[in-house]
Image 1 (cartoon, rainbow, N blue to C red):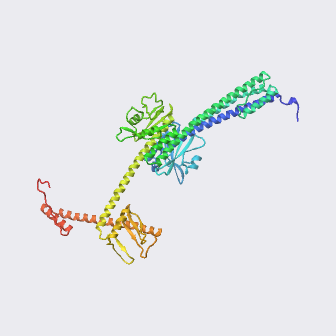
Image 2 (tube, rainbow, N blue to C red):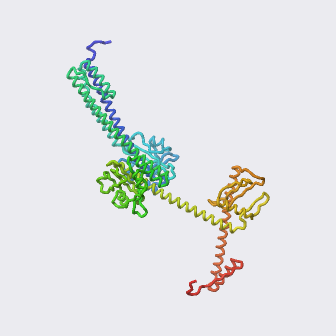
Length: 628
């Protein structure tokens, strides 16, 4: 081993190198942490933004129209293209909006939103030759919005892609919506941050070397102490005290430099923590608002009763938007009053109990929105001239009302109130506007559903009444209303008891078992109406009927009902044909004569022959001026 002191590095060199390397490690660690955190924050912000855009855009897709697209020039292609162009124009960073489906050959484009002159647009039916790994792996099972994990760059720039399922009105997933958002700004900012970090590193390098040199000249005790402190700082312990025993001016200056650097690092880390906390809070708020939109969308598809749907919506809005009162007003049929239909707050419940209503004028925010069809926000109710002080809601400090519109017609107002001034941001307005559109659609859907249910009930009632009348008339016309079979032969029923039993079964329409003789009575039902019965009795005392036997008898009764109905329809058709034939014959005979007296004579003769029996037919003109 070579122990020649002249060949060993000096203590100053060793200390200078040691503290220089420690300083470099600290700088590189901090720069790397800052760069990675900022880079991750930028990409996360872009992903959350794209997630929100794609989720909202997917709700605007019409799966039924997508299924009808067959060519680039058909009307369904144009409808989807116009809708996707609106989505693309909503954000300047959105580059491509396209819908896709899949067949035996793979994924293909249906509508790639385009304007005349756009480049790089896929045609209808064009295969997607190089889909992203996330899309390719999840296309068949996608049930929510997903995002490619990494930004990709090609000759057109840097992009980040997201995909969401498209559903038809039946609930079937019929395609996938894709949105590509430009990431050039994010990539440029990442490069700029990296360059700044490298510049900071280059600037700090001589400073660290100088500090190492000064520390190298320190005596052994300050050197050991300073090495320990540097190691603790490098490990992330920024609270370590930098009080160094100063046995020289250089040691005191170096100790002071370390104290300053540590304080700045603590300040920097504290600032970053505040920024991260603030951004996390905003992201959580956005996620909660997106969840509210999704919850309302689910409620629309599951709740058809407007009296249950509207209170549920008010609860969701208050839960996810942090407001203390939400009210939904509906405009009356005369378009004169806005009537409160749902609210979640105690004050709102009082207003509901007294049937709170407002005129469609400018004396209130709700009335203003309902009459004008434009949203209205009062960020400070004390200074807003349109705000009306409501004693049931004394804690209101800011209010926002949004119109509920269908086809340009205002059908109601969504009113939200907060206990804090300036409580509503632009993002809240945008999200609640989307929510208001969904609420309007839900109200209209429930109204249409109720009308359809009422129409169906009326139709069923009318049809049941028609069946009952037709079968009552048919039963009066036929000679025999029933037959019985005793095992040897069948014969018509003449007993009045049997008719009374038929009447009882017709009124109840229920299967009955007789305990005394083991008989069973099966109602013969036709489209909800009981038109007769099938009565079965054992010859040898009581009997227990099995479920299979009962099922067999019920099936026979069902087939008998259909056969009887077919026979009645045939007879009715034959009667109508006979009437038409008779009318035609009489009309032909009358058309063959032109004399008035001959026409009257022919008419009475033909009617007498056709009617038959001892019938006297007379035809006579009324006298002029007679009222008879």
